[in-house]
Length: 267
Image 1 (spheres, one colour):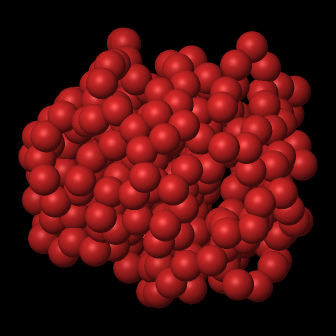
Image 2 (cartoon, rainbow, N blue to C red):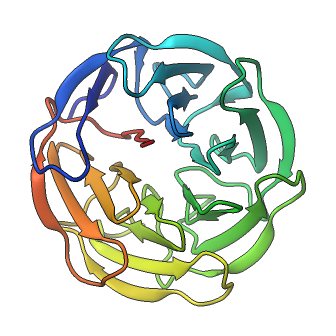
Image 3 (tube, rainbow, N blue to C red):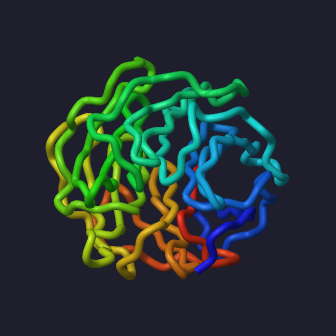
C-alpha cells in the first residue's frame, strides 16, 4: 500500500478510462477529505506522521497544483466532507465530534458549525442541495451511526437512522436525492456492501449492491447520474454505479498509483 502521496489525478465521470495526472497537493498525505462546488475543489486535513489542519484548493477545470485555502479548526485526519455547492463541511476525524465549515469560493480558516451526535473518525459524508449526512466511523469500535445537518444552518447534527452494518473507513457519494455508502472495515472483515439512503427521508437504509471486493479507504465522488469509487488499501481500481438504480459496481479504469485514504470530489 502507498501511504503519503501528493498526487492529484482526475477522471471524466461519464467516460470510462484510467485516471490522468492533474497536479500536486502542497504536501503528501493520506486520510484527508474533499468537497467541491461547481468550479472549485477543497482538500482538508489528513495524516503525514501526524494529523494536519491544512486546507488547499484547485480549480477543477484547470490543471495545476493545489493552492493554500486556510486551516481547519484543529489537526484532523480520517475526517468526512460534503457540500451543497456553496458551503463545505468537514466533520469528525481524530475522534472528534466537531463540524467545521467554509464558503468554498472564499479562502479562509474554517468556522464552527456544530457537533456530530457521536465523536468519531474514519466516517463518510454525502449531501444533496440542502442536507449533509455523516455515516459510520470508529470510536472504540466501528459504529453504524447516521446523522444529518442542514448545510446552510449552523447547528448540531440530528439522528438520521443507522447503517445496516457498523463500518469505518467507508466511502460515500450522492446525486440530487440519493446517497450511497460503500465498503469499509467492520472490525473483523473488509466489507464490499453498498447501501443507500434518500437524503431527505430519515430512517431508511436500503441494500444497493456490492463493490468488486471488500476494502476500506476508497475515495468516492459523483455527478448527476453516476457514482465512482476509487483506490483504497493496496488497490488502484476504479469502479462505478448508476445512482438511481441498484446493482453491483462495474469496472471504470485505474488510478496512477495505489493510494489508501483517498479524498475525492467532483464539480
